[in-house]
Image (tube, rainbow over all chains, first blue to last red; front, side, top):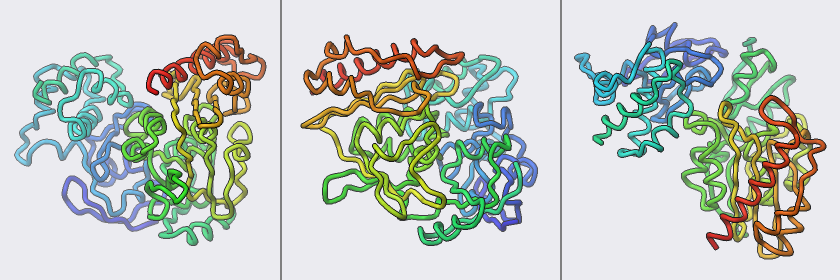
Length: 153
Length: 264
């Protein structure tokens, strides 16, 4: 067991975790932040994408102990505290950027990381950045449109 | 995955000491190791994280003008900060953005996956792998599929790249895995060329000496047109036959040379 302390969506959290616990499991099972989805659990699909110190990371391929001392951002931290959607989430809603919704938390976290690095991405840049996020409804066209709209294009 | 003990030393000495214990394994970015452990294909008793060892992270230039990259530096950091442009471009296309934010140069080299990108850059650039024990030239470092010169308990500290006059890496992508189906790194130095091929051979990354000879006498893609890579010993799987891979290696080499010629 290891003791960890980190910030999740701006809130300090701490506790004991098993050394082998994945960050995705810590977020979902311990903190009950179940917006982070586990799709493949093999680092392929990106449904579990979160931000660690601002960088996009697959939380199923990082240990919870490795997140000790970091700032973690999840989908729960994207909307405002009153529940109103942020610009990316609104754009996904408006442009029908989701079908079953399973990949959506990861897509939104990836989009947020992209727009921070590249505020006005081209369509090719968006598609390239989403290489690690798989939508099995194959709803990519509207996801790309939503991200373009969220970037003000 | 099986239980293990996680250790995060603050310095190289601490990491080396922890690695001396039985069944201890280095954890760098974990982008290969953690999925492997989940499948129970690896079961180290101790994971020694190098993420907190500051002297193993970052890029700098040494007195000989070589680019020195700490072993725990991520692909994303190399992509953003490397003054060796071909290397930065190669790093910018490994895996996907989330993988590049975690995966490290040292992890890639220690694993020596036969389809990984970094081994071809290190071999073509005639880089030196620096460990806690010694300096290993690239030609002696790669020893076959998932096999390197590293000894038990030996830790990669940094990698030193001489910067070629010009260089280019061309990857024929395996779109599902984002690994190279075949990747060719061409490095042009003032006195010679080095060509390294990844993804193709059953023995892992290798130098394509016939291509190097042809380019040493004339640096042009035409010079490679008649140089054939023997299909014997190339990987044959559902993604491509051995003869397909040897053909693609030729095409990637020609494209890399054409790009270098166009830019110089």
